[in-house]
Length: 559
Image 1: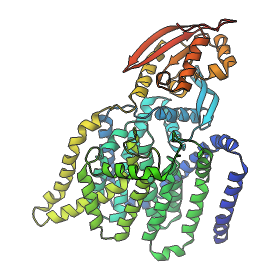
Image 2: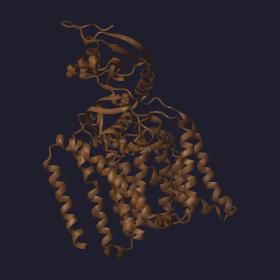
Image 3: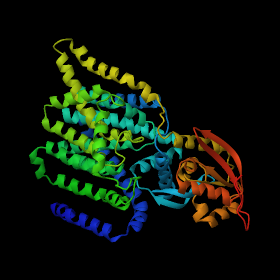
Image 4: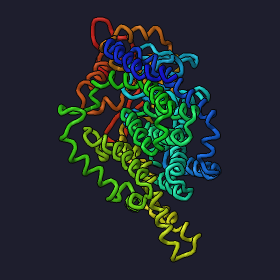
């Protein structure tokens, strides 16, 4: 067995190197479209099976507090389902995640669909594109879509459940690190009432799930370091690999787990299991490393200075640090509790681990061109560092409680810090209830498209800049640019789709982007058309056109 483990530390990197250096980027993306969802599914099934096998160890790690964990999870799900509005907060990313999940469900390929049809309820993607985001979240959505169909309410429910999982996981890690049910419950309480956690917990953004599974991975690793069984080892390896595939920076949970190993009794390093689990984890994350290599050339909307540069550091560092102290989006009281918790942590290594976890997921965005919490809707990046801060805050609540014990009754000393936490959250309730102006134009486009969708008859297809959005709504769609680059395909649609060919004049036709505007004008110039319906939001127009076959020998002006 030891020989196999030793060989794996050479064989796995060697095979990965030969694969990643021997395949062109374009071919690698085609391979990953098929390979990625299958590896993620295998990792997920291993995680579930190992959790079942390690259920007794998990139960012991909860310190007979399973009821408390359940209550915290139920409270989290209830609050996130009732307090914040269910809406979109990002420019189309949430539609893309659902469309990739739709593609995984029907075709087994992790691609966003640029040309797809839905006939008699059956989805077919004729032209797909591998997305730059990792695929753990779309895969998770696809599991729910298997049972409830492709629909947006189900996707929102998934994120609410993931937010609740994050609260329960915070409680679990608190128990493992501090051995105090009170400190663990206080940490979960803090995580629950972080305003941005609630705001984003009812979107279809990836951050709530990325934050929750980073916690699951660390909790599973801590459990393995404590128990040292093969079942807990398999849970640790699969959880770490699954958590690594939510966002590009999710891989940073691996060095956090590495740092957690310093909490282990030195004798455990002589055990073979630790090295076997390390090798298994690496094998399971090779596909994610391949994904990052395949999409590294993506610009991510960056300026000429690039995605990462020292020139972004000063602004992002000052802006993001102010997030925790200025009281605009994050309660200053929570920050003070975390500082108090850090100063009072008796086991210094546990405090150092939480600081390291926070610094990694806070610091990764500092040199990033869009890493400012005040850049558009990128305050959502703060969710990834909320859990270690909440855990430190839970320890701070415990310190407050102990300081009060000599002055008030024990029961009152336990409740006062928690009540103070709730009180200092209440000024943020109006913020949590807001829809906000961020991404308003794209959100309006989404809402109008949902309304206009009812005016499109069956057996029809729509040209749009966002075919994935309409496909999730159950409407056949194709990229508007096809009218320019693949006009023969569009012209064939007039005989293929008896319900007609339509054009969605959308967000991208309104923004000052000459390329995207050009596609809109060329569609309306090339094909005779008539307006079916028109809506407006702000200064933007959103129109549904019925297109006719092009006039031979001349271009028809738009009507």
